[in-house]
Image (tube, rainbow, N blue to C red; front, side):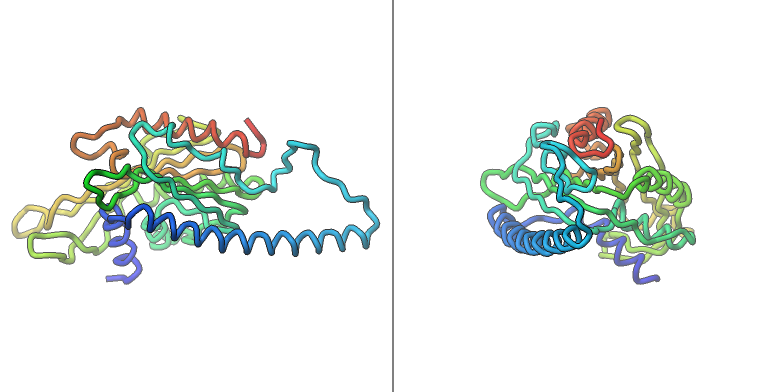
Length: 291
Protein backbone atom coordinates (compact mmCIF):
# COMPACT_ATOMS: atom_id res chain seq x y z
CA UNK A 1 0.00 0.00 0.00
CA UNK A 2 1.50 3.36 -0.96
CA UNK A 3 2.50 5.22 2.17
CA UNK A 4 1.39 8.62 0.90
CA UNK A 5 -2.12 7.40 0.04
CA UNK A 6 -2.57 5.66 3.39
CA UNK A 7 -1.32 8.60 5.43
CA UNK A 8 -3.37 11.25 3.67
CA UNK A 9 -6.47 9.06 3.62
CA UNK A 10 -6.31 8.40 7.37
CA UNK A 11 -5.71 12.05 8.15
CA UNK A 12 -8.48 13.09 5.78
CA UNK A 13 -10.96 10.78 7.49
CA UNK A 14 -9.90 11.06 11.12
CA UNK A 15 -9.63 14.86 11.23
CA UNK A 16 -13.39 15.05 10.80
CA UNK A 17 -13.75 13.44 14.25
CA UNK A 18 -10.90 15.22 15.98
CA UNK A 19 -11.52 16.98 19.28
CA UNK A 20 -9.85 20.26 19.97
CA UNK A 21 -8.16 21.58 23.10
CA UNK A 22 -9.98 23.96 25.39
CA UNK A 23 -10.62 27.40 23.81
CA UNK A 24 -8.19 29.20 26.11
CA UNK A 25 -5.41 26.80 25.13
CA UNK A 26 -6.16 27.39 21.44
CA UNK A 27 -6.24 31.16 21.92
CA UNK A 28 -2.90 31.11 23.70
CA UNK A 29 -1.29 29.12 20.89
CA UNK A 30 -2.80 31.44 18.31
CA UNK A 31 -1.51 34.52 20.15
CA UNK A 32 2.00 33.07 20.26
CA UNK A 33 1.88 32.29 16.55
CA UNK A 34 0.47 35.73 15.75
CA UNK A 35 3.26 37.44 17.69
CA UNK A 36 5.89 35.45 15.81
CA UNK A 37 4.21 36.21 12.49
CA UNK A 38 3.91 39.89 13.34
CA UNK A 39 7.56 40.13 14.30
CA UNK A 40 8.67 38.47 11.07
CA UNK A 41 6.32 40.64 9.03
CA UNK A 42 7.58 43.81 10.69
CA UNK A 43 11.19 42.86 9.99
CA UNK A 44 10.33 42.08 6.37
CA UNK A 45 8.61 45.43 5.93
CA UNK A 46 11.66 47.27 7.25
CA UNK A 47 14.00 45.39 4.90
CA UNK A 48 11.76 45.83 1.87
CA UNK A 49 11.23 49.52 2.59
CA UNK A 50 14.97 50.09 2.92
CA UNK A 51 15.70 48.29 -0.34
CA UNK A 52 12.95 50.16 -2.17
CA UNK A 53 14.23 53.51 -0.94
CA UNK A 54 17.76 52.63 -2.08
CA UNK A 55 16.62 51.66 -5.57
CA UNK A 56 14.49 54.79 -5.98
CA UNK A 57 17.28 57.07 -4.84
CA UNK A 58 19.73 55.47 -7.28
CA UNK A 59 17.51 55.96 -10.32
CA UNK A 60 16.45 59.43 -9.24
CA UNK A 61 12.73 58.70 -9.49
CA UNK A 62 10.40 60.53 -7.13
CA UNK A 63 8.89 58.52 -4.32
CA UNK A 64 5.14 58.24 -4.67
CA UNK A 65 2.41 56.52 -2.74
CA UNK A 66 -1.05 55.34 -3.75
CA UNK A 67 -3.94 57.69 -3.15
CA UNK A 68 -5.72 57.30 0.14
CA UNK A 69 -7.89 54.22 -0.03
CA UNK A 70 -6.28 53.14 -3.32
CA UNK A 71 -5.56 49.50 -4.08
CA UNK A 72 -2.72 48.31 -6.28
CA UNK A 73 -3.53 44.59 -6.35
CA UNK A 74 -0.42 43.65 -4.36
CA UNK A 75 -1.80 44.00 -0.84
CA UNK A 76 -2.35 41.44 1.86
CA UNK A 77 -5.88 40.18 2.32
CA UNK A 78 -7.77 42.33 4.80
CA UNK A 79 -9.83 40.80 7.59
CA UNK A 80 -12.97 42.38 6.12
CA UNK A 81 -12.70 39.96 3.17
CA UNK A 82 -13.48 37.00 5.42
CA UNK A 83 -16.82 35.58 6.51
CA UNK A 84 -18.16 36.86 9.82
CA UNK A 85 -19.75 34.65 12.52
CA UNK A 86 -23.07 36.37 11.80
CA UNK A 87 -22.91 34.99 8.24
CA UNK A 88 -23.00 31.37 9.43
CA UNK A 89 -26.46 29.76 9.71
CA UNK A 90 -25.56 27.93 12.95
CA UNK A 91 -24.19 29.18 16.28
CA UNK A 92 -20.45 29.84 16.41
CA UNK A 93 -17.99 29.92 19.28
CA UNK A 94 -14.34 30.89 19.01
CA UNK A 95 -12.80 32.23 15.79
CA UNK A 96 -9.13 31.48 15.10
CA UNK A 97 -7.28 33.17 12.24
CA UNK A 98 -3.84 33.57 10.69
CA UNK A 99 -2.18 35.04 7.60
CA UNK A 100 0.48 33.70 5.27
CA UNK A 101 2.77 34.53 2.35
CA UNK A 102 3.63 32.24 -0.59
CA UNK A 103 1.39 29.45 0.74
CA UNK A 104 0.17 26.57 -1.48
CA UNK A 105 -3.44 26.88 -2.62
CA UNK A 106 -4.91 23.80 -0.96
CA UNK A 107 -8.34 22.34 -1.70
CA UNK A 108 -8.13 18.64 -0.78
CA UNK A 109 -4.91 16.80 0.08
CA UNK A 110 -6.32 13.42 -0.93
CA UNK A 111 -7.48 14.81 -4.27
CA UNK A 112 -3.91 16.00 -4.89
CA UNK A 113 -2.62 12.47 -4.24
CA UNK A 114 -5.14 11.15 -6.75
CA UNK A 115 -4.03 13.79 -9.27
CA UNK A 116 -0.45 12.59 -9.01
CA UNK A 117 -1.54 8.99 -9.53
CA UNK A 118 -3.34 10.05 -12.71
CA UNK A 119 -0.20 11.71 -14.09
CA UNK A 120 -1.47 15.25 -13.46
CA UNK A 121 0.60 17.95 -11.74
CA UNK A 122 0.34 17.10 -8.04
CA UNK A 123 2.00 20.29 -6.76
CA UNK A 124 -0.40 23.01 -5.70
CA UNK A 125 0.18 26.50 -7.12
CA UNK A 126 1.50 29.13 -4.73
CA UNK A 127 -0.44 32.15 -3.55
CA UNK A 128 0.95 35.64 -3.05
CA UNK A 129 -0.90 36.17 0.23
CA UNK A 130 -3.38 34.13 2.21
CA UNK A 131 -5.67 34.53 5.18
CA UNK A 132 -7.30 31.63 7.01
CA UNK A 133 -9.82 31.19 9.77
CA UNK A 134 -11.44 28.36 11.69
CA UNK A 135 -14.85 28.88 13.26
CA UNK A 136 -15.37 26.65 16.27
CA UNK A 137 -18.47 25.18 17.84
CA UNK A 138 -19.79 27.08 20.86
CA UNK A 139 -18.79 25.67 24.26
CA UNK A 140 -21.24 23.43 26.06
CA UNK A 141 -22.16 23.01 29.71
CA UNK A 142 -20.45 21.28 31.33
CA UNK A 143 -17.43 22.44 29.33
CA UNK A 144 -16.03 19.86 26.90
CA UNK A 145 -13.66 19.88 23.95
CA UNK A 146 -15.21 21.40 20.84
CA UNK A 147 -14.84 20.81 17.11
CA UNK A 148 -14.87 23.12 14.13
CA UNK A 149 -17.89 24.28 12.15
CA UNK A 150 -16.16 25.85 9.15
CA UNK A 151 -12.67 26.49 7.87
CA UNK A 152 -12.04 29.21 5.29
CA UNK A 153 -8.87 29.95 3.35
CA UNK A 154 -8.63 32.96 1.03
CA UNK A 155 -5.70 33.14 -1.39
CA UNK A 156 -4.47 36.01 -3.56
CA UNK A 157 -3.01 34.60 -6.78
CA UNK A 158 -0.96 36.17 -9.54
CA UNK A 159 -2.62 37.82 -12.50
CA UNK A 160 -4.63 35.30 -14.51
CA UNK A 161 -3.64 32.37 -12.27
CA UNK A 162 -6.88 32.25 -10.27
CA UNK A 163 -9.08 31.54 -13.29
CA UNK A 164 -6.69 28.90 -14.60
CA UNK A 165 -6.64 27.30 -11.16
CA UNK A 166 -10.41 26.77 -11.19
CA UNK A 167 -10.26 25.34 -14.73
CA UNK A 168 -7.42 22.99 -13.78
CA UNK A 169 -9.29 21.95 -10.65
CA UNK A 170 -12.28 20.86 -12.72
CA UNK A 171 -9.93 18.77 -14.85
CA UNK A 172 -8.46 17.13 -11.76
CA UNK A 173 -11.90 16.33 -10.39
CA UNK A 174 -12.92 14.76 -13.71
CA UNK A 175 -9.79 12.57 -13.69
CA UNK A 176 -10.57 11.39 -10.14
CA UNK A 177 -14.17 10.38 -10.78
CA UNK A 178 -13.52 6.79 -9.68
CA UNK A 179 -10.12 6.35 -8.07
CA UNK A 180 -9.62 2.87 -6.67
CA UNK A 181 -6.88 2.35 -4.14
CA UNK A 182 -6.04 0.33 -1.05
CA UNK A 183 -6.96 2.03 2.20
CA UNK A 184 -7.89 1.49 5.82
CA UNK A 185 -11.50 0.97 6.94
CA UNK A 186 -13.09 0.76 10.37
CA UNK A 187 -14.46 -2.66 11.35
CA UNK A 188 -15.78 -4.26 14.53
CA UNK A 189 -12.28 -5.64 15.09
CA UNK A 190 -10.43 -2.39 14.43
CA UNK A 191 -8.75 -1.12 11.28
CA UNK A 192 -8.41 -3.36 8.26
CA UNK A 193 -6.99 -2.99 4.75
CA UNK A 194 -9.53 -2.96 1.93
CA UNK A 195 -10.11 -1.73 -1.60
CA UNK A 196 -11.59 1.76 -1.43
CA UNK A 197 -13.14 3.80 -4.24
CA UNK A 198 -12.90 7.58 -3.99
CA UNK A 199 -15.15 9.64 -6.22
CA UNK A 200 -14.95 13.39 -6.65
CA UNK A 201 -17.41 15.32 -8.79
CA UNK A 202 -18.76 18.84 -9.29
CA UNK A 203 -22.17 18.87 -7.61
CA UNK A 204 -22.88 22.49 -8.61
CA UNK A 205 -21.09 25.37 -10.32
CA UNK A 206 -21.48 29.05 -11.17
CA UNK A 207 -23.53 29.92 -8.07
CA UNK A 208 -21.24 32.63 -6.61
CA UNK A 209 -18.56 35.14 -7.60
CA UNK A 210 -16.79 34.92 -10.96
CA UNK A 211 -16.45 31.14 -10.72
CA UNK A 212 -17.73 28.69 -8.12
CA UNK A 213 -17.58 24.93 -7.60
CA UNK A 214 -19.25 22.70 -5.05
CA UNK A 215 -16.97 19.66 -4.94
CA UNK A 216 -18.35 16.47 -3.46
CA UNK A 217 -16.19 13.57 -2.30
CA UNK A 218 -17.78 10.15 -1.80
CA UNK A 219 -16.08 7.03 -0.46
CA UNK A 220 -17.30 3.46 -1.01
CA UNK A 221 -15.95 -0.01 -0.33
CA UNK A 222 -16.77 -2.62 -3.01
CA UNK A 223 -18.62 -5.73 -1.75
CA UNK A 224 -16.51 -8.57 -0.43
CA UNK A 225 -16.41 -11.47 -2.91
CA UNK A 226 -17.14 -14.00 -0.14
CA UNK A 227 -19.90 -12.30 1.83
CA UNK A 228 -21.29 -9.97 -0.82
CA UNK A 229 -21.19 -7.11 1.69
CA UNK A 230 -18.77 -4.18 1.97
CA UNK A 231 -16.08 -4.60 4.59
CA UNK A 232 -16.34 -2.32 7.62
CA UNK A 233 -18.69 0.50 8.49
CA UNK A 234 -20.12 2.89 5.88
CA UNK A 235 -17.70 5.70 5.06
CA UNK A 236 -18.74 9.32 4.70
CA UNK A 237 -17.31 11.86 2.29
CA UNK A 238 -17.33 15.63 2.46
CA UNK A 239 -17.99 18.83 0.54
CA UNK A 240 -15.75 21.73 -0.39
CA UNK A 241 -16.78 25.02 -1.92
CA UNK A 242 -14.27 26.86 -4.10
CA UNK A 243 -15.14 30.42 -5.17
CA UNK A 244 -13.17 32.94 -7.23
CA UNK A 245 -13.58 36.71 -7.21
CA UNK A 246 -10.97 38.48 -9.34
CA UNK A 247 -7.54 37.33 -8.20
CA UNK A 248 -8.88 35.86 -4.95
CA UNK A 249 -9.86 32.22 -4.40
CA UNK A 250 -11.55 31.00 -1.25
CA UNK A 251 -11.91 27.38 -0.10
CA UNK A 252 -14.74 26.68 2.35
CA UNK A 253 -14.89 23.36 4.21
CA UNK A 254 -18.11 22.85 6.22
CA UNK A 255 -17.84 20.47 9.15
CA UNK A 256 -19.71 19.49 12.28
CA UNK A 257 -23.10 21.19 12.51
CA UNK A 258 -22.65 22.82 9.09
CA UNK A 259 -22.52 19.52 7.19
CA UNK A 260 -25.56 18.60 5.15
CA UNK A 261 -24.94 14.84 4.90
CA UNK A 262 -25.32 13.93 8.58
CA UNK A 263 -28.50 12.54 10.19
CA UNK A 264 -30.70 15.41 11.36
CA UNK A 265 -28.58 18.01 9.57
CA UNK A 266 -29.29 21.57 10.73
CA UNK A 267 -28.65 23.21 7.34
CA UNK A 268 -29.54 22.57 3.72
CA UNK A 269 -27.33 22.58 0.65
CA UNK A 270 -29.08 25.79 -0.39
CA UNK A 271 -27.95 27.49 2.81
CA UNK A 272 -24.39 26.33 2.24
CA UNK A 273 -24.43 27.72 -1.29
CA UNK A 274 -25.79 30.99 0.06
CA UNK A 275 -22.85 31.05 2.46
CA UNK A 276 -20.54 30.84 -0.56
CA UNK A 277 -22.34 33.79 -2.15
CA UNK A 278 -21.85 35.82 1.01
CA UNK A 279 -18.16 34.86 1.01
CA UNK A 280 -17.88 36.15 -2.57
CA UNK A 281 -19.49 39.45 -1.58
CA UNK A 282 -17.07 39.79 1.34
CA UNK A 283 -14.07 39.25 -0.95
CA UNK A 284 -15.13 42.16 -3.17
CA UNK A 285 -13.40 44.62 -0.81
CA UNK A 286 -9.99 43.04 -1.50
CA UNK A 287 -10.30 41.52 -4.98
CA UNK A 288 -8.43 42.82 -8.00
CA UNK A 289 -10.35 43.83 -10.03
CA UNK A 290 -13.02 44.68 -7.51
CA UNK A 291 -16.71 43.88 -7.82
